[in-house]
Image (cartoon, rainbow over all chains, first blue to last red; front, top):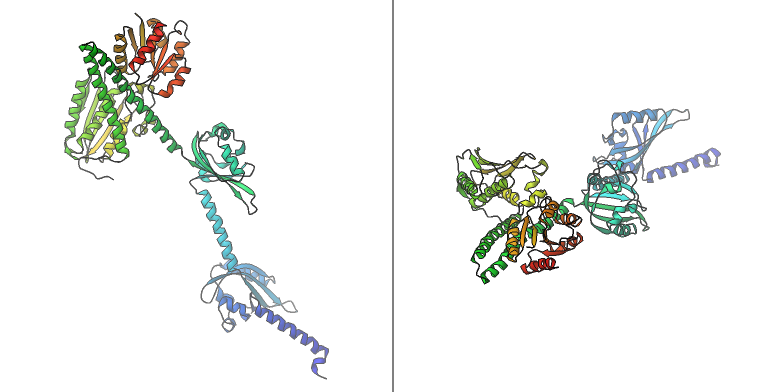
Amino acid sequence: MSKSNTPKNKYKKREDIELKKFVSAVDQTNDAVFITNINGYIEYVNPAFEKMTGFKRSEAIGKTPRIIKSGEHDPIFYEKLWSTILSGKAFRQTLVNKTKKGKHFVVDHSITPIKNKQGQITNFIGIWKDITKRKEREDAEREDLVRFTNLFEQSPLSVQIFSPDGETIGVNKAWEKLWNIPFSKLGKYNILKDKQLISSGSMTYIKKAFAGEAVEIPVIRYEPAKTKKIKGLVEYVWTKAYAYPIKNNKDEIKEVVIIHQDVTEKEETERKKEEFVSMASHELKTPLTSINIYLKLLQKSLAVDNKQTADTCLENMLKQVERLNKLTNELLNVSILSSDGLQIKGKHFSLEKLIKENVKKMNGLSKGSNVTIKGKLQKNVWGDPDYINQVITNLLANAIKYSSKDYDIEVKLTSKTDAAMVSVKDRGFGIAKEHHEKIFNRFYRVYDKIDRTYPGLGMGLYISREIIKRHGGNMWLKSKSGKGSTFYFSLPYSSIRIN
Amino acid sequence: MKKVLIIDDDEAILEAMKIAIEGEGYGVETLVNGDRVVDKVKTLKPDVILLDLLLSGKDGSEIAKELKSENGISKIPIIMISAHPSARDSAMISGVDHFLAKPFDLEDLFNAINKFIVS
């Protein structure tokens, strides 16, 4: 009788077969498996462990798993690991390990105590599932999410997201900046019920977007307070918008996005330009009207040999031609400055002399005038005398224009370290603070009705400051409504190249 | 002598029109702004008013409306003058009797004045 036929041997054989199967399974699994003794010294590793860590079985056995420690986990982590497994429980965690060559890899780590029949822990079995790829994918997804959130939040364009039935779902920071309220204050807002968008004609476009089409919404002036009263809301915005639906892979509209661009400044400049053109043509037509009348009168008076009327006509026509000349020069200057074509023929000259000549001319021009000069300039300045002359004429003319009948204007000359400073002070009705900076802007006019009494294109200050700036100087003003104004400019002694 | 009142804030135009219209044998009064126009018109009692649309202080069409709604002077014909040809419609709405765009032909001005004064 052979041994193998005894029941005990039979059992042993079955155990052998199962052990072989088990070992073969452990050898072939993609998960790294290692067994340590109670003290943590490795007694067994499978081929997947060798592959994952780069340590050969012979190199790993007798060592502790410390050989693959990445340093990414703090001591508390290991304390917890040990206290868990020593208490007889399994420890599961995501673990960052390091290969023999030092490359990090991420595993789903489980370590389980193995107990003998008496319930004492004899070994630990560790199993690592390599999740580096999964981790990388998750990180990439998280990064994508962060990237798209930033893309949304940090866009300079206002973005507003709506549900398919028109309710607001979310907005970005630029939206809050555009309307000057936090999203939390908006409350319920359904764009499809916005009456202002219906009356402005935008709704036709918006509805197209909700029906599945990407559209560009023409520029409108939107007054949010007309739709919703919220404290702090911006008064109005000129906005250009795009709207598009976001669909899922079944082609169903999940959301509709509206992107706004604040074009208020551009639109208002455009409108000021239009106003300017309209105003300029009016100003040009006024002397033309007079000339037209005088020409007809001249014709008539020549026919009847009325020399007196003919002379009056000629004299007045010359005045009107001079006025036209001034207006067209002003227009020309504006266009030269806008196209950056100002040619400065610079030289050193006496600014004091130029100012004195101008003041003398002004004082002689109209009765009751009183322009006085205070101070002296020690040095010559550098610049184009023709352009600087224009600036002085303009400032003096303005001072006279905006003063009361018996004007009293003071010109003050001061020598500074690098530049000459000139101020022109009038006792006129002054300029409110809100206009101080804007008054130098192109196309900007203080729309007092009084302004109409003083014909002109209102470009004088813009032109003057541009000329001074291009000479390396600056122009500014001090004024209070009702208390007169003082305009200042500085002009350097030496040439400054500015681009 | 029939009297024409000209209201325009451009003194050069005022003077030119004054010389021209006086040459036609009318009396001419001028106002350089829109202040207290109704009172002044009541005193001066002109036969025709030439009114510039763009005035300092007050809009020409506002003045026209005031004059046209004032008893005693509402029948006085008003000829509105503007550098903006596009202002014709709004001028006519404000109740004026005639509109001339600047720069206008002197003959057209005379024809308009004569038409209102004769009728």
